[in-house]
Structures are given as structure tokens and as C-alpha cells.
Image (cartoon, rainbow, N blue to C red):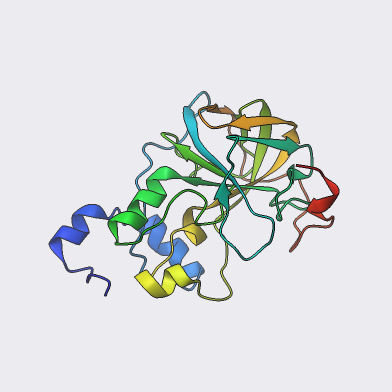
Length: 214
């Protein structure tokens, strides 16, 4: 059973703020329990680190950490061998380790890739990056194209905890410059965006990820 928001110990673990509540309302979530604190608003030059790279062969399933610890990002396509790659604006996904830790603090046994993120980051405020922000991750460059995600159906995590953090804190991007991303690589803000993205919005990939070898 999920602890009540009136529980003092639980409240100490949660970082709920008005911005998160407003976004939760937009997403149809009545009581956002899980909101991470990723530090100050991002500025150009901020750096963090990649703690895991994850892929899945099919959609609708959790991603698994890549055994080799390296993934290839193809320009205007996404992660080689990943089911979500394609000609659309959500070619690669990010989630902060700080977000995953909040889920753990709420009693969930979750790890890297369990929220279907391709790249798990740490020590950088990924969730507050404006649309259009250019981020260097490994040797690749990604433009932030979407913050959060509308879940049309409740996932297993939501039913277990009464909330899911990815719809608010998951981040998507499209690949501007190709490259490799390895566990331990730096994540750096190259340029903050204006709030607009420069890639056509699409509901699903336009090409099959299987066309690009892993």
C-alpha cells in the first residue's frame, strides 16, 4: 500500500512543487507523489554523467542496460537497434537517476531502463531543459524535443505506487549529430533552447529500427 502524503517520513523523501503539480494536472494525474529534485535550473556549460545506456527490441517493454556499455546514435534516427528509433521527434529518451531514486524511495524495486529510458543521467537537471536545448552526450549531439509524456493507459508502476514519474520527468530528443554514448560519458549543455524544437512532431517512428544495425 502506498503511504499517505500526510505521512511525515514519506513527505521528507518527496520533492513536490507547484510546477510538478501543474504538469501532473495537465497529464491527468490527481496526486503526484513522485517528483525528483535535480538541482538548479540548467545553464549552458552544465555537466552530468551517463550512468547507464539501455535498449529494447520491442515497444511496450522495459529496456535493459546494454552489456557492452555503449550505444550508437544515428543522426535523425536514434539509437541503433532500439525499438523507438525512427523518423520522429522522440528518437532517444532520457531519465535522471534522481528520478529513479524517488521511485525507489516510494517502495518500487526499479533500476536503469525500467522506465524505458535509453540514457540514464546523473547530476544534471535534465527535466527542466527548455525545448530546443542542445546537449552533448558522449560524442553525439541531441536536441531536446519533448518533456514528459501523456500515458493513455496506466502502467504497472502506476498501479503499484499510485503514480509514475516518467510522464513528468522523462525527456526526449532527436539526434542532431551522430556518435557513441558510453556509460561514464559526460553530458553537457551546449546551448539552452528557446522553448521551440526544430523537428516535426510525430506520434510514431516513420522508419523501422530494424533497418539500422546495432
